[in-house]
Image 1: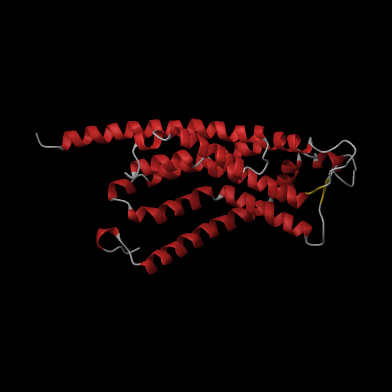
Image 2: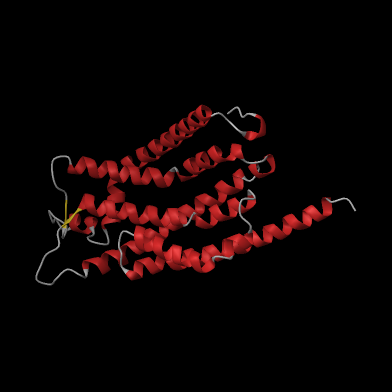
Length: 259
């Protein structure tokens, strides 16, 4: 991308750069989705375990699996596409996270661009770690929510609705765990200081609680706590790293000043 003097670009160039990054990210998701399509059967068996063990049901000769069902002629196809898309998002995380950073990086100074590799190396495991925590939370969330079903009623669960719930849970957890990476990246870029990050800590805790309440697909206090508590810890950890980085920058500037 060609930048004008001062690192500024025409608006049209921004749109072209955005289009290029989106196309590359979409291509990576497509490749990952192809892998999800190939291993669809194994993945569905694993995702269904909180409600019903499909493998055990198949071995025992059952023609159904508890309360799970697929509805409509296009239901099986839509389900497989959704599963493949979920896998594609997770597998291609390093690529689309890099494309996101690469779109932002031209506006940074040269000394800040060198942290691109560090950003990707950090953002990817944080996203996957959050997604994995969401996956571990899934059985507990399902058990809690299905526990509200009256004993006199049967709860029939459409698999595509259930998968949509799983998708939201995993992506919300994964996306939320990018908070510390974003804060540290903004600190490295000189946008936020460590004090600016930690000073409104009460408002930050409230914001995290509000985020988990608003975007958590379950809405139950236990699942929200499982997401909110690590986020609060990561927020303070990011603030601490930012303070250390600020002190390092201050010492470096003092050394560079002529006596």
